[in-house]
Image (cartoon, rainbow, N blue to C red; front, top):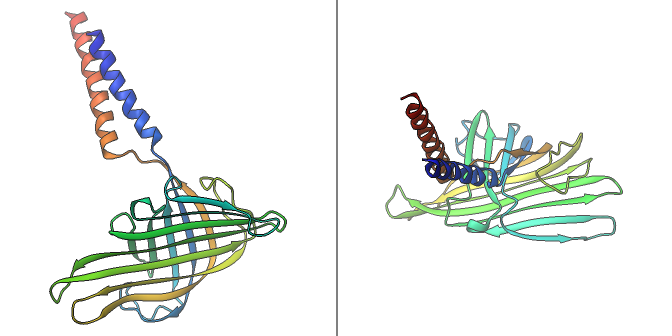
Length: 243
């Protein structure tokens, strides 16, 4: 009985370890106003988009992609992380305009690229934050055959405060400005591109926050099974003592 309890406890402890080892994601939120509409349909319930407030929330995994750390100019340092497909550090971006959100999942497309870059000038001080990505995948075409769903986006911000070297630390500069652009189109068989949206923005604020680590489904299952087994063993021991 004691060995069963030890085994159940070990299973539960292992699951907890897996859960706590799950890397916390980082979110970068950019807010501003649409300045140029190159051509958009009613994805966000209104068209054209010029003058509409927007928000772009990028989700980033700091453990993925290739890392480079370099000093482009005296007094500056720059940290970049980039990768393709499953190694892309950019996991998703959620664009919200007029209360409607379009979410691009960079983990789903078969062809994706993402990168983040932050540059600091300790002498100023100033921090520059950049997020960008592009992705594409084949989807069924309403005219038959396949269509190619393509997305690209970028957000950059010059803030009046240095960015923490550890991107898991919060960053919310008191001032600054930036810009960005977003486009999405599906190429349908035999009729060119169906434009979903294509617009540029002026960014007035940005911030970095950390998202709590979320265990994988397998870790949750293992954890629940372990705790359940431990509880069952304990209940049997109490019943045996009562008898």
